[in-house]
Amino acid sequence: MCSLDPHPDHSAEASQPARPLELIEREICELAAHLAAATCRWLLLVAEFDERAGWADWGVCSCAHWLSWRCSIAPRSAREHVRVARALTQFPEVRAAFATGELSYSKVRAITRVATAETESELVEMARHATGGQLDRLVRLYGTALAATTDQAAQAIARRSLSYEWEDDGSLSLRARLPAEDGALLLAALQAAEESAAREVEAHTTTAEGEYAPRPAARRADALVSVARAAVSGGIEGASQSGAACLLSVHVDAQTLAGEHIHERSELEQGVTLAPETARRLSCDGSVVRILERDGRPLSVGRRTRTVPPALRRALQSRDRGCRFPGCTHQRHLHAHHIQHWARGGPTALANLVQLCSHHHRLVHEGGFRVESGRAGGLVFRRPDGSPIPAAPALGRARGAALAERHGALGLFITEDTCRPRSAGDRLDYSIAIDALIARKRRAT
Image (cartoon, rainbow, N blue to C red; front, side):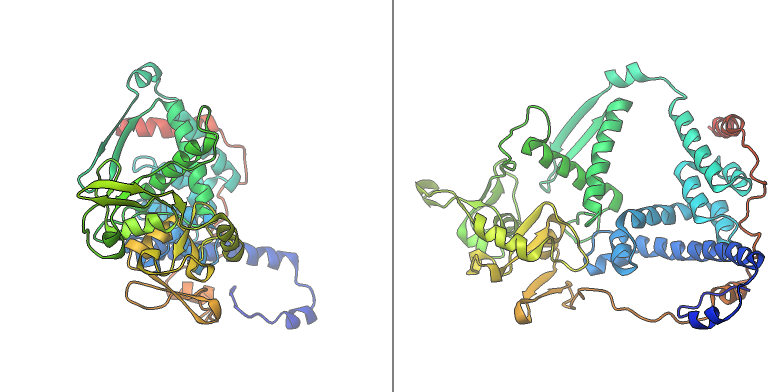
């Protein structure tokens, strides 16, 4: 019987004679199955936590971001854990084999990349017999075979299109259709932008009512905006090489900018109305042109000035070194946020500024979160209910029964052979296996 002691006594082990290698091998294999079963339970909890958006109360951008912060998991691994967790709710046979320790996390991760309701049974049975490396290669080859079963290249090129329209709430709707290779290029660009941002923080948007939008779709939307930013900054051929960001013009009167309601106007150049808080967010770190008007006609136009001058921005970047929101490690697309907005008398001074990423800048303005100056120049971030957000999660000592004992109480009988492949590592005929999967998929459709 193996166990997981959070505080093992290594000094006692050092004084004991070396154990036979056979016993070490047996414990390694048994513990691997226990870890698989425990990982399944953990992922199912993650899936429920994600489904109920438990992570959103902390102001983080996604369940993966919460896992990275609270469970000390690298962002890329956290995203993959969330993907597998969601997939487990859709594939009962995979879940059952995983829950008993029969399939390892690596095998489950591979299966969930390509499994469908029609091929789930075959993939689980193949996973029982294949080694981890064999199954990984099988899944890659199967995915490639699926992509090449139908040749519709000419039709795809003829059908390419992109359309857009402004919605009633001021948002922009896009709809596009691209040939496979162009679609893959776009997805690669979006994935690169998403992974770059996710190393620091994974973004999402919120609706006007505060309900969180679907996380994967929102992350892709933010990745598309990142690609657009790169384009207008000279990242593509023929784009401006000045390095200046895309100009976004907002027309807002002084009373609206300092108040809670629109007094005269608060809108984009295209006529789309903005909430006063959104106008304040955009003007936190933008250029301001002061225009004096009478009866709607301009009397004088001042010079365009930056609310945060370059020297002060460099000092802010040197001090904050990225987004200051707790748990966020974003270091790109940062905004200089006025803790007390300049339209309400706040000075454009280092003590009144803090760097925030695009997502957390939105949360602080439109999402109900707050940032306040704390003691000794520190910052206090608060959730919409007023409770403070800790700079780091509290650490606690692990408690409870050993892993094997807990599995025994759940009725799981796990040995060193539970997760061992049923084959002896024999050569696998990938062609036959892939043909069988494709045939089963075609019969189902």
